[in-house]
Amino acid sequence: MKYSKRGAEFRWNATLLTPTLVVYLAVFVIPVAAVVIQSLISDNHFSTQWYEQVLGEDYYWLVLGRSIWLSLLAAVISIIVGYSLAYISDRIFVSRTLKKLVLISVFTPLFTSAVVRAFGWQIVLGSDGIINQMLMGLGLVEAPLRLMFNYLGVVVGLVHFLVPFAFLTSSASLQSHDLSLVRASRDLGGSPWSTFWRITVPLSRTALIASFSINFALAISSYVVPAVLGGGRVKVMAALVYETFSIDLNWQLGSAIAVFVFIPVMVVLFSLEVLGRRTAIPTRSDQS
Amino acid sequence: MKTVATRSAVNVYVALAVIFLIGPIVVLIGASFNPGSGLQFPPKGFSLKWFEQVIASPTYRRELLLSLVLAAVAATASLIIGFLAAAALGRSTRAWASVLTSYFLSPLIVPQVVIGAALMQYYALIGIGGTELALFLGHIIIAVPYVIRSIVGAVSEVDPALMEASRDLGASRWRTVLDVMLPIIKRSAVGAWLFAFVMSWINVELSVFIAPGDLATVPVEIFNHLQYSADPVVAALSSLSAVVALVLVLAIDKLTDLESMSR
Image (tube, rainbow over all chains, first blue to last red; front, side, top):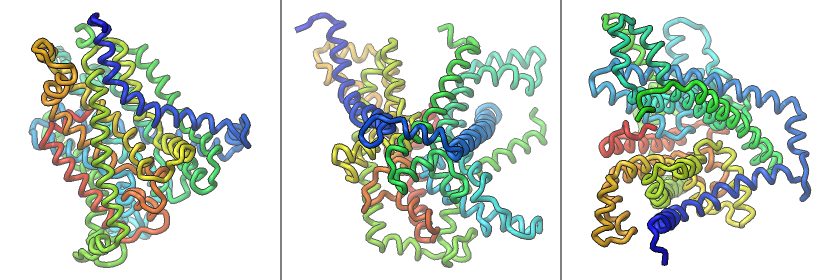
């Protein structure tokens, strides 16, 4: 029996971690590895046929480009909305009730199923939906505007999906700032506007980078929102994976496409991680 | 900055943002009370008949039950699995702890499509495809990262002196974790359970791949329905799903600070 403290500590941690490690291995690591392996198999032998198909057909490039573009757009918009909302709630609102109202408005969509949210947007954006009702009622348009089953509907749906995430990351960051820096800036004559851009935003840099990469990953992985609000006209890569599996029943091709959904995520995460490291601003918390 | 104009502008902006965020959900719930067969908001009357149809349908009842039970069981299992890992990870600030934490959080960034496709093939291979067990395991891998993320922070704030005292007084390591650490982080643990419950209850993108063919979960049923038509019965079903969400948001708020659920 080992009497050394470090040995016992290690074995205890190992005991605690083993169940989780086993579950992850069985339910996550091995299946995902299996998908990658499946994408390299054709007729029971190794083949890059599926990758050649995806890389060779213009259609897939079109869909991939569209997915990336939509996800970037949605991520940027959601961060602008989420960050501004977090800033207002944290720095401008004083009343706890108001802050709580904002928080509940952010959490409610988060805890609602993506499909339910998209369904709600269908009713709002539809040709006899509430927006068109208002526009026609006010006489601003004569015929209902086409607000969904197109790119607009998908972007709206994606932004709606992403704003809560952006809010939460921004809020956590803003609350961790050293406010004396902000006060110092104001004392030295800085306007609220310039203080915001030259102090607050740079201090949030890490959070903004993290938020952007997470939101991009979430957007490009999403297929329910584009399916429901795009109405078959706006096909994204993630939706193609689903269709290839469920309709074409081609698991190997589907796996290859799935890998292509995953690659942009990794690229963005990696490059932003590098970017974040290179431009990191030391903050007070770095000196603890 | 604090001029009346700026104040009003800020308030209007926030009001619009709030409407944007919860509007679609309110509209959906409202439209499911509409007596007519079109999905109208504002509703032209008030009728519970669509909800009655949902309750009357054996299929929907079974699906509601499945989703509820699945969420509860998956949340419990995820809490146990996540707590054990967090108990180890939260006590150390060394490199291995943060590497392993990132590893355990990694399912969060893998697209659910990819996980879904992976699990579907893997389950078929080992012969449990299309079973409730398959669905259950999938929901665990979705929920555990959230549990770990919530609880690791709480564990790291537990005063190590308390744990040492417990060991000095002769308690075994298991006893220390279960009788000392766990009660201290109780609020965080319950919050994590509720969060895991919600993640399972609302899960659609993964579940669509691995749900049993004959018995879907509520979100999967809604998704399949929306592919073809959008009728008020599905709207009523969706409203029920959303109401559960709202209730849980308020429950978590009462229990732990909602704010602490942020990253």
